[in-house]
Length: 174
Picture 1 (cartoon, rainbow, N blue to C red):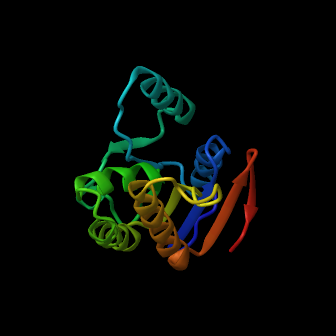
Picture 2 (picture 1 turned 90 degrees about the vertical axis):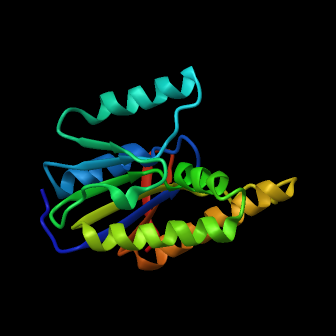
C-alpha cells in the first residue's frame, strides 16, 4: 500500500472500458479502508444487477455511501481515500435536478467537487468520455454533453493524474 499526501486521480474512458475496476485497484493501492461514493440512481432490474456486481467485486473492506446528488453532505474525513463512481451518472442527476440547465448543474457540481477534494486525503474520480462519438442529434443531448465535458475538464485541471481506460488498460494522459 502506498501512503502519500493529498492526491486527485481521474479515470476516464468509454462505456465498459474497465474504468471502475482500474479505479478500484488504484484506490486499494492507496488504502486498506477505502470509501466508495456511488452516484447512480437504480432505474431498472438490469442496472440493479450491474450495481450488485460492482458491490460483489469490491468486497467488505469498502465503506459505501450512496449519494446521487449531495456528495458534500457525506461524512468524509481528512484520512479517507475515496472512489467517486461515477461523475457521468452524477452529472445526469444534477442535469435533471436543475431542469436541464447545464450552467446551474455545473455550478452545483463544481462546488461539491471543491468540497470533496479538500476534505479527503485521496480521491479517484471515474467518468465517461462521451464526446468522442460526434455531435448529438438534439439540444438536450448537446447541453448534457457540454455539461459532462466541462465537469470532466474541471476535475482533470485539478487532478494530479489522469488516465484513459481502453479495453481494461489504463493509459496515463496527465
